Image 1: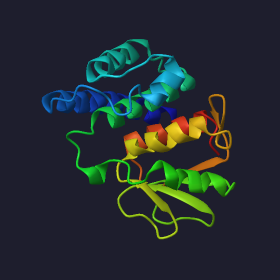
Image 2 (image 1 turned 90 degrees about the vertical axis):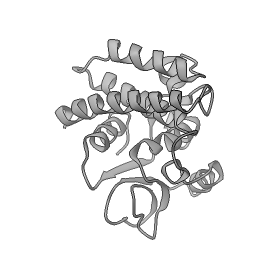
Image 3 (image 1 turned 90 degrees about the horizontal axis):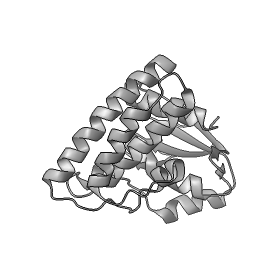
Image 4 (image 1 turned 45 degrees about the vertical axis):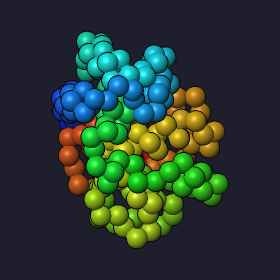
Length: 195
């Protein structure tokens, strides 16, 4: 699993570079939100512009330790935060987060464990949040691309129900169709305490 997470992280570095370049070409100056919340939570750095996002990616590339699971997981989460933060001017809306904060607050109020479904075919019983193309009927469709999970993670890290400090709780994750990036995200969720 760790081998796939490492490969997925390398692919994420490449994807992040591409998204930053596309943001620059689209004339994007600021990230949305600003500062990027997961980057701030995990590194303490305030990244508010595409230029700072580019510098942050380069710093992560220099400092990541592929032999340490925590380093891989933290880097994966920061990279998906950067991707989501820079793409708002060039990415079609259907490839951005499909939910809003109120949708996630409703889930939190249910006080039940949440199943994060990464491109699964079906959803189990309970409260489900789906990432992928075709959402099962009994799941909240968070987004079509794996990086949209950053929107949920930002919410989870602020929630006393879904996290304690930097550890996730009351969250289970399941992976269906495997891609290197989905594998890296799944690995990182587990590393941060998801069941």
